[in-house]
Image (cartoon, rainbow over all chains, first blue to last red; front, side, top):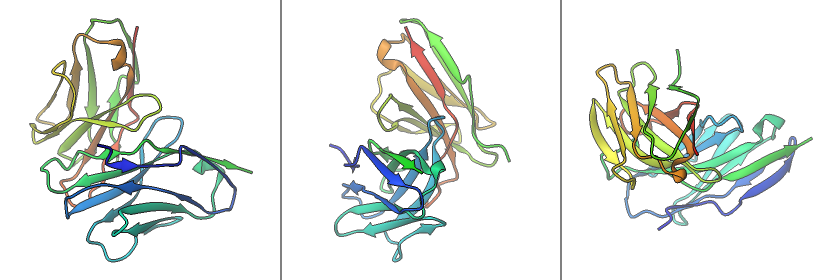
Length: 117
Length: 113
């Protein structure tokens, strides 16, 4: 069963606008972590932001913030003031802490973001 | 500090051949994970190694194997290559557990013809 769902295959956003990328997840593990990664066309995966299941506040990192709604199992990424360099594929991923394999992330299918001038 | 390094960057193999991919983690990271990313999809977990021991295995056939060396570098081996093995293979290193993110290398793009 799909554990991470990203329903937006692609989005266009104008420079300097904000954009929200949707992510819902499914787990019965009470302890888990949620990650967002950016993958430009070059292929590298760049870590953006992390939210732990017990964190009381939404995570923020510069222009990135995570809108964490635990009851809805939702972890949407908000990118403020979009820049042309933000054009990339964005992946939501989950780590379930109940396993001993912290190197295992489950990724969604990704959302392609294109920032236009 | 150097990030995660992977070699080679590109590789072309023929069906039935064997391939070895290499990865060096970030200095101080003892955990290495391998992922396969088929075009248009998210990465899929293959293996995790920590302190030279396998800590996790994804849903991949036994043709896939890996190992970790005393310096924490790692190799991924794939035997009897199939066309469907064509993908970007990503290596990631991390500190242990908690909120430690995975730091990925630039990947090895494998094409099987």
